[in-house]
Length: 97
Image (cartoon, rainbow, N blue to C red):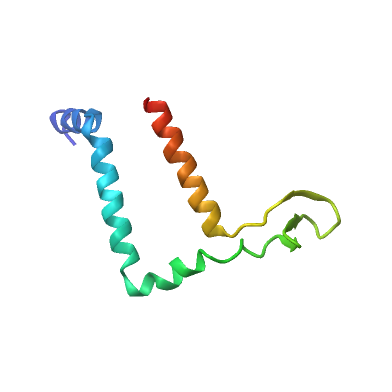
């Protein structure tokens, strides 16, 4: 890549419109991905529980299968993704204001 091309790329990435363009592209990708039939299994599996590499008992996570409980995880993956993305979204909006 020549110096002219790299400076043009740096100017393009430094533009204020890049954030908006990224949001539009991410929205278009999400709408496209939801409507693809072979991704239906991936999307519906997000409603399941966390992976089984940890032990759950009545909504609590147990390490090493003993009785010491560190914290409770009672929601599914879909709930955690929704709340996490909403947190990031509103945190970003708060930083912009």
